[in-house]
Length: 252
View 1: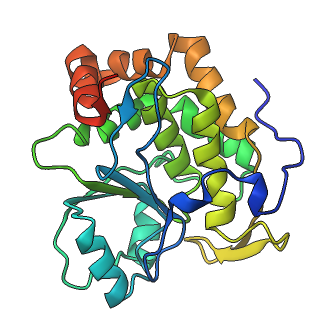
View 2: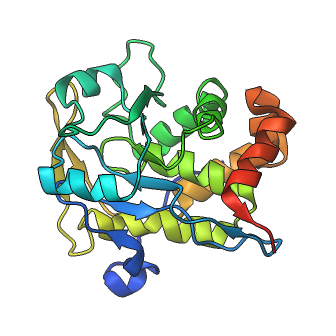
C-alpha cells in the first residue's frame, strides 16, 4: 500500500469545516471530534471528545476554556521523552491523565522518518495501543476527554480516524477532519513550520494530503475487514465496541 501523497491543495477554502476549530489560548489545532453523520444515519455526539496539539503552552486563559469544555480525561499520545521535555501545563486543572504512546518504544529515533513510513509503523503496531486507548473512553466518568500528541495531526489523526471509522463515519468526512489540521496548524500560507523534536533536532511540518490517512484505513481493512473489526479483535471486544457506539452515537 502506497502511503505517499500527491501535492495537497492549499488555501483556507481547500479545507472544509474551518468553523470547527476552537480557540483555546496556548493550544493549536483544537476541535470537537463530534458532529459527523455516519453512513447509517446516526450522528456522532459533540462535547465528548476533543483533539488538540500539546498542552505544554496552555495559558491560564486556555485552561479556563478547557474547564468550560468539562474535560475529565487527558489522553497523551506522545513518547515519554516528549512528555518529560514538554509536560502538559494544566494550571490547576485536575483531569485524569493517561499516556498511550503510539510510536513504538523500541529505543529507535522515529522522529526523522518520512511521514508515510511513520504512519505505516504506527499502523503496523496499532494493535498494541489503539484498542486500549479507545477503550479508555468507555470507562465510567472518562468523558468528556481531550486527546493530543505534539501538533495534534499525525498520531492524534490516526487515533481519531480509527475511532470515527469504527463509529461508521464515511471516509470522506474522516479525511475532511484530518485535513483540517493543515489550517489548524497555520500551514496553508505555504510556509513550512519548524519544530524541535524530543531529541532537540529541528524538524519541519508541512501541508499533508489525504493519502496518509486513507492509507491507514485501507491497511486496517485489508487485514481485518474494518476499523471496528480491528478494535474488536485486538482487545476492545464486541461489548467494548457496542459501548463506544452507545456513548458516541445518537441513533438515526
